[in-house]
Image (cartoon, rainbow, N blue to C red; front, side, top):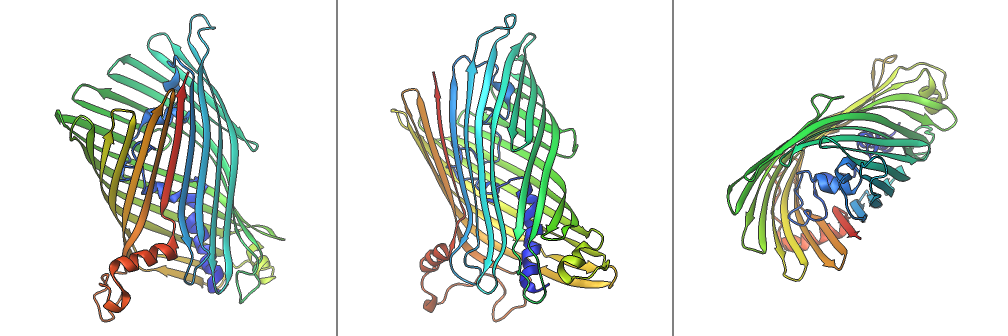
Length: 492
């Protein structure tokens, strides 16, 4: 199929589990909401109230006594290569949302109701391009949908919330019930149905040695999950967590305590997994292969919050993560052979592959609150990414051999993350903005044979310029690695 086409196909398979869930890559490592990202960007701890503002936990809005309006904007530029063999390769995502919660009194027998509404738009572009072979892969996403729902405060300390998300012929929905028997305890049950279509395209002619038609990797994501969870809180300690009934090993749990008046300690773990069954379509032939894709994420994290004074605080965080994907594709009849080789023969093509990424993050952040409503924060993190050895292969049962194969050497990268945020209140409006940027520090292949060195990152020679010069050049040639958040809220 040619190395360029093989690379395009393998990258498409590798990206498919991530893109199928519309999961922007930078959010995995520049974590946090708009009011926490600025403190280092390693903030996996959940904020249920922020999720409620996005209408993801509608039952939490059952007790609203004012009209609440929120606007969200998120931009993530993962990669923008401007030089080198892969110049033109690009990946970015944008999200825009508007949500509102409107209390309408108690029209149903004294039961307070809150009407929920919102609009969302998600767009994304991923391009894999090389100077030698041109465009190898293109993925463009654009999704728009509305949100309508209701939340109600029921007797016996119960609250209920539900919403529908119609969009482009497919409807997502959320239903949630919460029970708060005491101010310090809560229990909830949430059911969520999600759907979405994505199309990843490899243009015709990507393979230079044989005929290769335009390929479309169609990912049809339809799934639902039950989440059962609860929390307990006292003046000195708290614990909360949830478990997904559809996948018993998928869970999240967080706990913390305040051993000293100025010190809070916390720790947590979460694990999520997704599976998809999808298809590959070739122009002029139809579906040529069925795919099974999977993604599993596991994180362990901890931290400390230190009060430095009445207006200053320090946040320390540590996160260890593991991301694992796997892909399998099997030819449908003789369609793949007819699409690429123009022969009606069952070669029994079978693709398998996968990769795993492990990361460690250590972050520190400082925040300050002024007396006149302005808050700001600065932070930094060190991120180490380890990509263990992996391989991808396309085999033929009929020929009993591999047709194409790619091997990934073990790779290690160190990056520096710089973050900041600012927020202020003006009358009834609250404005918050945050940004994070990764800067590459070093990359190595620890298992590569030595060539005058140990395989570790080498120090620059005088002819290469200072480390600051190399750093600036790396940023110019390898753009991206950033995340920007904006949120505007008001009540009236």
